[in-house]
Length: 202
View 1: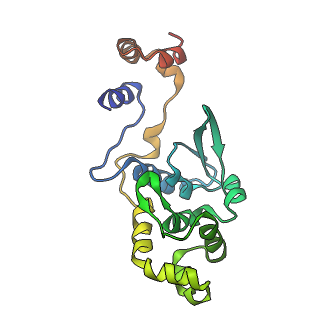
View 2 (view 1 turned 90 degrees about the vertical axis):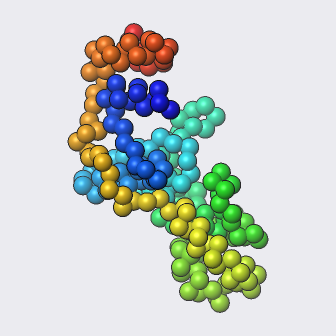
View 3 (view 1 turned 180 degrees about the vertical axis):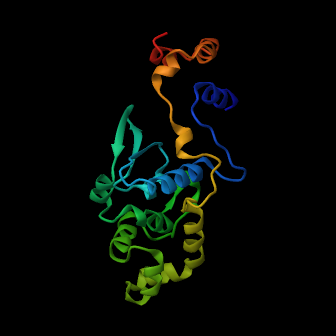
């Protein structure tokens, strides 16, 4: 991790850290806050983390690896798959859980049931306000697990209101400057970062 951080510093790529916050929260806050500065800007997130799907919009895409290839997931792709909008994805995971992040879902509610509930009600708050309109089985499960579901929403929701020690202007760089950055080239040679050296034509 220290070597990667040093690489970023030498390459001029902005590096920011906040105590007690995870990287996905910093990314979410940066995208959320800066996307409102200019509605024409497009933000691409490269990550395997499913939590970022809650950020998908007309301005935000997610790139991830599938079978060794980089695939782009768009706002439209998400809706086509789930038949609800990305801003309800957190609520969906609140019911279903997420094994990768050790989030326990409601035992008895599977993928299909969770998807149907969110398609109809959009948020867990709406579901609980209309709890008596649900099938008896789902009523019972959701009443018994109400605290779990609410806690899940707090855990899964990415924090978008952080005060970041970085701004949009600081994130500007160009590849041509990298190719003449002797300190960066030397660093990559010392650590045998062959793929980066190839990008630098070295």
